[in-house]
Length: 453
Ligand code: ASP
Image (cartoon, rainbow, N blue to C red; front, side, top):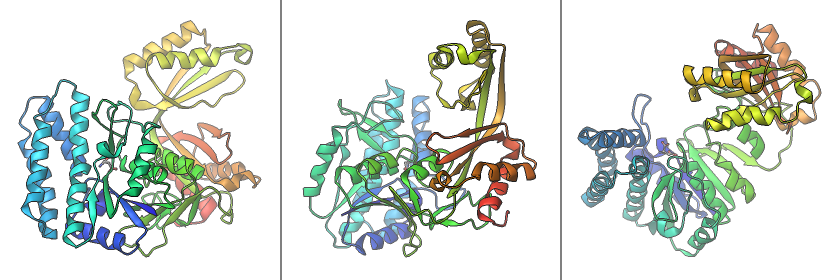
């Protein structure tokens, strides 16, 4: 049995929903279908989820959300019209939306989640209705009734362990099950969404819970590419990746799959296949426990920007017990999360996402580190990009770091910091944001020999 997830662009129009139907029907093992809300039809288009967030914001400011409601409804009605669905399908979506808009606003975060979740919830109902009009036994599944229990963290929910046992029972149901992605219910019965793009997570949870043989994730690219195609023209497609490699790459900027989505599939040892709704015969990319290392040391290069580093140096830091804990403790007090901590004998850098800071907070933290930890120097550097060079093959190959550093040197990119992950499947380079593109191209050239844009 396969769990199949379709992303927003795969469901953005009636024509796309027809493709989804064909794909599902072409393989009798495709029994559980997880759907996103309708996404973008073209690059300037708006996703239904974004419209719903705007709508929720207007409601919370006591402003008229009508324009946004109409924009959302227009998306569903045009899909329904293209598919020849009965009017009832659209009017039910309208009523559902109105009900949510008129609901309790005393907890704004929860109100936003309820509206956000309607994008996938209503789309799942629409898709199920379409399958039924085609004479197929298909059922919309309500995540509440199916038991998809999540933590009560608005916009950032996590599945609760007890959800799995209950969800397993979906195996007993007949027909094709159309399950909305992106949200679940707390024990108290309230809607909470995962973080953005979280329908990938729903698919992975269901694959684990139902003990599927495969989790297929349909999107709009033929495969996972070895580097961002906006940075290098026609990059190499990746045929097979390990979970660890994919996790590292998606964490560092590969948006094909949500970076938290692999965990449930990984725990149950279920392979994940990335495929293209618009070209389903392309083999796609398979994510597995182990792969043959036939590609050389590096499988992919990812980069992301918007980071800063707090550099702290203190003579004899290496002998001071608890220095790291105290430093990170200060950040914890401000609820800040950090990404990496490359360190030397007498210095350490803490890399964080820049958007957690404003100038006032930055000065306060700097002052606290200087005075409470008696640091010799505290320096905060902004506008950094992190580049991850990823590959299981690095463990067996000698000299990968030297090759990477040489390539960056040749491209005149100054390396601000280096961190070799303890797992030895990744190397991280911190560079200035202005050098990011050049650095990635140089690394790609070194490990894959391609033509930069
Ligand atoms: N529709 C949601 C979003 O845009 C979730 C998803 O598509 O996976 O983030």
